[in-house]
Structures are given as structure tokens and as C-alpha cells.
Length: 249
Image (tube, rainbow, N blue to C red; front, side, top):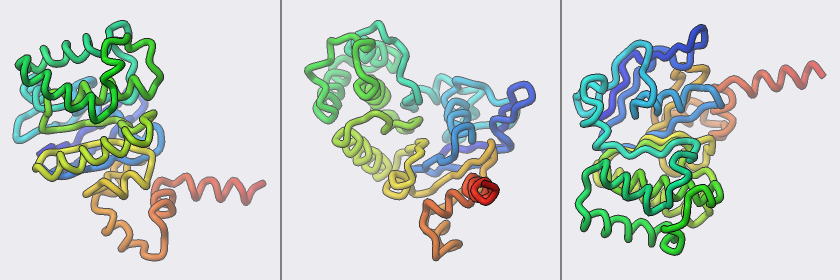
């Protein structure tokens, strides 16, 4: 279980996240949705200890994140929204670094890597330098790295961006199977169709505030005559703003 309790993040005068209260149960896929700047990446980066919240508490399986960062990192796999780290390493060197960080045994590492290389059709490129890859290829490198230790918690910031259709399909299937095993997936996306396909619950953020948390069925029950896209745009606020702008033209 992951719990955000009154979590806020303020940069000088800008509020990136405001009093976030969110509970993610084991066995769930939860999607973070919102416009750019809504607070999705701030939420994710707070969970993976890239940034420290200004206020509030994050707990994972009852452990306070601030006091148990290493233990929580060991059970978490993270894909960043911009896969531009470690560019001068080869893919193989990066994965070896990940394996060492997670204290994986060599046999475990080799078996898991072989499995992931086959899934993402990457065997021929494993010794090439990451810097030479396209964005989509870099994304595969970091997705493989995040899943290498088979962590209980997958934290994925726009994980499908740049992936080819087959790789995107395979990753979505892996996310479903991971949740079916009682594990947790938290990911952000701009694609409502993906959220509808995968998510047990949606967390919709607007200007740093959580404005909805629940199932898609619950969301649609409140607005039975609207599409998910229309519901989201109404809640996020931009649709109304654009309509006012068009009326003013």
C-alpha cells in the first residue's frame, strides 16, 4: 500500500502539489492524469525520493518514506519522463549498474534480462551506447532497467511515450499481470484511452490539487451522457476556457 498524507510541494511562490491525500492498494493500477503542470511528475518524484515534499508524509507498506528511503527504493522500479540519464553508457553497462544497485545475483540478472530483451526485441542492441538511440529506444532501455529486479512497485512517468506499438502493447500487458500478482503500478499518462484500458482507479490532478480519485465507472456514473474525454476536459477546466475564448473571437 502507498499512502500520500497531506503532501504538498512549493517552489518559492509556486504550488506544485497541494495537500495530496491518496491511497493506492496492493494489486491496483492507478493512473495519474492531468494537464502539463498539474502535479503528476511532482507526485511521482516525491514517491521515488527525487524531490522532498514541503509538507506531509508518504508511507509505503506502513514504512515512512523519509525514514526508510533505501528499503522503499529496493522494492520500487522507476521510469522517468525524460530517459536521458547515463547516455554515455551502453545499454548493457546501464543494466549491470542497476543489477548491482539492487544486489541481484548474476544468475537472476541474466535470466531476467534475457526475458525482457525478448519481450522488447532488444537483444541486437544491448551493447550499443544509449546516446546513439532514438527516444523510443532509450525508453526501452530505461523500462527494462526499471523492471529488471522485478520490484513490487512500478512507478512509471509517461512510460509509453516513444515506444513502438508492439512494445507499448507488451508493456501494458506486463502492467496488468503485475497487478494480478498483487503488486502495484502507479503511472502517469496523457492518453485517456490507455487509462481506460488499464486503470483500476484514476487520480485526476488540476493545478496541484486532486480533483477526482476513483474508478472510471464511478466517473462515468456521475456523467452518464458524456465521453471520458468530455468528462475529463470539463473537470480539468481547459474545455470551458477554450469555449469562452472561441465565443470572444
